[in-house]
Amino acid sequence: MNKLKGLKLATGLSALALFTCTAVQADNWRYAHEEYEGDVQDVYAHKFKEYIEEHSDHTLQIYRFGELGESDDIMEQTQAGILNFVNQSPGFTGALIPEAQIFFIPYLMPTDMKTVVSFFRESKAINEDFPRLYAQKGLELLKMYPEGEMVITLDEKATTPEQLNNKKIRVMTNPLLSETYSAFGATPTPLPWGEVYGALQTNMIQGQENPIFWIESGGLYEVSPNLIFTGHGWFTTAMMANRDFYQGLSDEDQQLVQKAADHAFEEIIEHIDGLADRSLEKITSNSKKVTVTRLDDTQIAAFKARAPRVEDKFIDMTGEGGKALLNQFKQDLKDL
Image 1: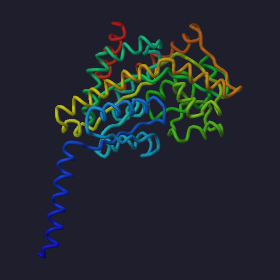
Image 2: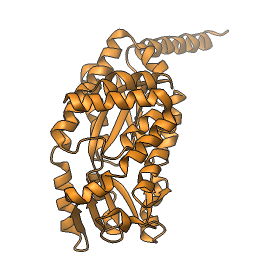
Image 3: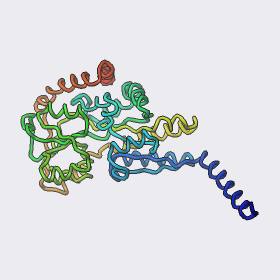
Image 4: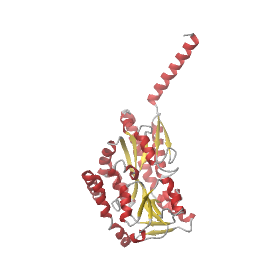
């Protein structure tokens, strides 16, 4: 080996050793979520990122909706270890963890903000039972949090289940959510998010459900202008890590990640306070075609009477474990 070649090799090995040493101390982690810039999951992700980068030498790369595919794609990438963190709603995770579909039992969750937040803070089902279920699928559940009350949009006004008959309502690929809309009288139609706007525009479907901020940011009110507040549930989401990645972190980094998740939770609770009202104001300001219908107690009772069918379906799908989780859920709510 000549001296020049030996010098280059030595220099290269030194650089590799320096890189390896640095990499042990500081990594660039990858985090994907399901929403657009400025939406709730995006705000949460950036609050998480800010905490990580302010309290360590690690950096965090965030990928928004569509940059790495749809929800199913980013979950697969997280389980494969390509992504370190993922934010995905139980609506999609339900295919992987059937018990996660519990959030789609209508009228199980309260609708007032204060009670919802207290539930997520204190619930044994949320903070003890769900982490064990996620761990079985190679996922470290770091935080579950609410995003907003679910609102139905339709091609015409409706106040009764009968008025949903023969309406094709877009749902996530979630069997229990399909059962909910079947119980409500509609025809549930699973569609990827990227196809929803066009399907509404061409009348392939006649409605969909989402939190009001998502209806605003996605422009859904432009093609589905009748907003119906049924009070049947809140959109919930979960932030998690690849479990092998998380278990391989030092104790210090595990604490860092958990503190960042807790910090982002507090920030997002403040962010969603009043968000629905602000989003609705934007919608009504942008379109004169929009109608807003808030069901009264009698009208809600007609929908609520159909909920037990969905509970029964949930237990059929999840067995004794799901039944125990549902009972714990109800007890947690009762304790509030």
